[in-house]
Structure formats: C-alpha cells, structure tokens
Length: 314
Image 1 (tube, rainbow, N blue to C red):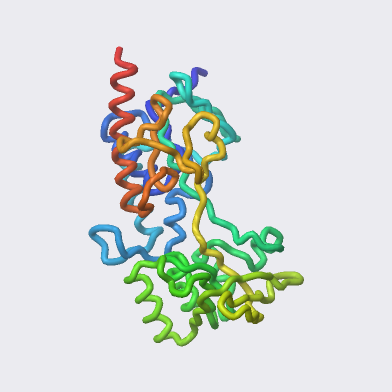
Image 2 (cartoon, helix red, strand yellow; image 1 turned 90 degrees about the vertical axis):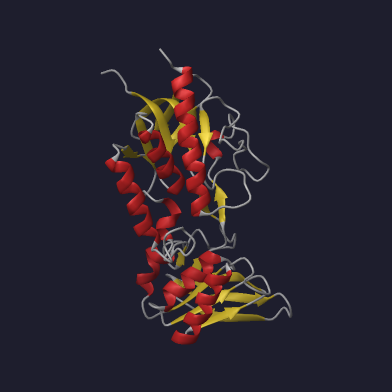
C-alpha cells in the first residue's frame, strides 16, 4: 500500500502544536499531529491558568481539550507514537516512530521541554515512589500526607496551591530569597491560600540536598544557604518544579540550536532547514508562555502552508 505523504507533520501536541494544526488545516493542508504522551503537553499538568486572554482563570486540561476539539472538528489526524529519528534535510521529510514511518512535505517541531531534575542521589530511583514532577498527576496519591514542593516560580506556586487542598501540609523549598520568578497574581494566590488553609510553609534561600527513603520516600534534608543550617522534613512525596529543558536531542545534528539547546529560528519560525518550522517552548526566545506558544504555532502553520504551496506547486 502506498504510504501517505502529508503536507505537514506537527511533532508535539501542546498549545503550539494544536494552534499550528488549526492554522494548517484552515489553509487546506493535509495535517498529521504526532504526540508521544498526551495531547496538551505540560499545560495539562497546570492546575489553573491566569494569563490566557478571555479567561480570568481556566484549568489547563480544559483549555487543551477546547483546542484539541477545535482541531479535530477541522479534520486533524493524530497518532500517539515515540519518535526514534527524523530525516529533515531532504525535500520529503521522514519521521520514524516505534509504531510506523511518516512522510511529509513540511515539518513543524513543537516538542516542547521536559522536566529539569534536581540532580541529587536517589532522584531517579525514587521517581514514582515519592518523587514526582506532576502535582496534578500524582497529588491524589498523597491525600492527608505531608509533602514538599521544590521551586520558586509559577509552577511551584500552582503545585503548592493544588496540593494544599489535598495534603495535610505543604512545604515549599525555594533557593532564592523571594519567589521572584513567580508572577505577582500567582504568588498572591499562594499567599491567600496559605492564609486560608493554614498548611503551607515557605523555606527561602534553601536547597534539598538529600532524599531519605527505604521502601518509599520518608523525608528530605534541606540546607539553608544563608546560615548553612540543615533540617530534616518528614514527607511522603517531593514535587519538583524547577523548570524545563528543551527536547531537541533527536534533531541536533540537522537543526541549528542555541548554546542552551533551543531551536534557533527567525520571527517567521523558519529554522535553518527549508520546510522545517518550529513553535513553542522548544524555540529560542525570551518569553515562554501558552499565549506565545500559540502565536508561534499560528505563524508556523501559516508559513508551512506558504512553503508547501510554493515548493510543491504543480
């Protein structure tokens, strides 16, 4: 059977990928979206979003469901597959997955970023047994328990707010003197929740140095950077929310990357390879938010259409 050659393959189903799909489909392109885990990407793990236009606040999963439904109503084809390699420099692009091989005239890379690890002993070993990177995914497992959240930005605040409604007590370990990386509205919501629930403690200028565990996590050791004092915090889980790193390992030999590993592109989302575009958190840029991912996706979807129509015109 002859293999389908799509006009565009979108790699990654977060807000950038879904928006790119919407714009590509509206332009008449035969579009395939390939997602590794779940449609919606890391946004699905966000309890509430406060800065997406037209919503005072919205649950992350709800926003992604709306985007996905819109793309499906336009005729989006999607598959779940683990991509093993990509060949991008030829005129017809090839994506090799565990479940199949896919071809397209253009590619939009929207792989996003993956969780950043603490890098301490036992972190990998105890992942799933007390170490987690998703409060929304795993929080219910620790109902009525004491937990720790590590981080100083929006994600850490949101995780603590979410967990405070489930868990007995939440301790936030922040390496900075303030939670300066968090938006004001998110931090204020954290303080309001802490005052209402009376079960959130923030340790500033502190780092988690040791995980204490036998069959599962039992506690962590924290050091205060100011006075070098250490304390042991009994807990059943630690939720790590210290940022993300770009998922670019598969394309680093063909696509130009920044020193930090993000894809370098112009304002029209063109990479250094003709017919390959980028959108979202994987792109080198100053602001990584859902709204900027959507903006990238809209541009990339439009540029893919212009490229396909001009390059493959009969």
